[in-house]
Image (cartoon, rainbow, N blue to C red):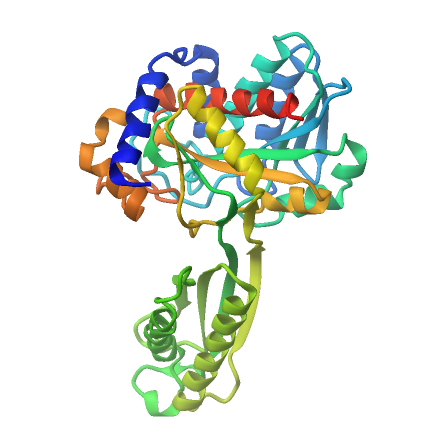
Length: 423
């Protein structure tokens, strides 16, 4: 799409968004409560209970708790038409909130910094809308998944027999709030989000007194050098059409200035779009870590471990194209992406395991009037955010619920209705 095409879609969509209903006070209150009471992956006990209570208060929903740990599944309908799954994730992140909101997290060091509170509230709002209508022509399964941030939640629900215990889907649908103008939808057929691996590198030195570095092997200097070398590894692949992204996220070593530690632990995040690229980068990490250890005179080889892995998120193209077109018809500024994004999700495991179609999209969460005209084109052409727009996982990530929830709820309803009547 050209810049003019993008602006035309956006202008038409923004006009359509003004016609959407205002945010329901119940869902605003519910959202603020969720945001103020976040729970970490696998420990979403109160969140799951609240979700189950809300679903049970709606007519027609059959509710099951404890699926794959703290997951909740609701089933509506049962007519002869298609079975569709609508998915949201429950968990928060180990982040200390810095938004200054009056409903900021009350749990120290835990925050809904990725917007899962938006996803849960929007799906519940959609469930309420769907149950208030005449019985659906098919079956709606609402999946509230735990532990997305750990990459374990979808797999946990599958291991607990979700495909055998509940109606099997023809298509799985999901959305994710993003730092975009409220109501803007972006997606694409084919690969949408990267595969991801978290990597732990343990560099094993020999501890000692800071006054006698000659008698020790300092893992801190090994780690510092390795972090810089790994940036070269990323740069070597930057010219690829969908280059891998390797980011150092954490480095833990030492306790005091006068103590040389025994070990350093470096954690990395790797995002890739092909199996070959993944294996190349992983091999490079091992090679560079071993080279640093050898150069420093370490007495043991480094230990490289992979954990919290996410698969590539792939949308089925015809279904994605149909939904994007339908969103536009319903007044959304929906823009197809030319390239996949580097974020990751375990959403795609459901469709892969079921052997069915799946469509995932991102929806904006920030007040549209905050964006200058030039911001729109940079968002869609360069994926560059304005300086004030805190991204997901930031301690300052703060979606605007009044502007975000109505289109997010409506998007799930529109998608559900479209797929329930699809041939």
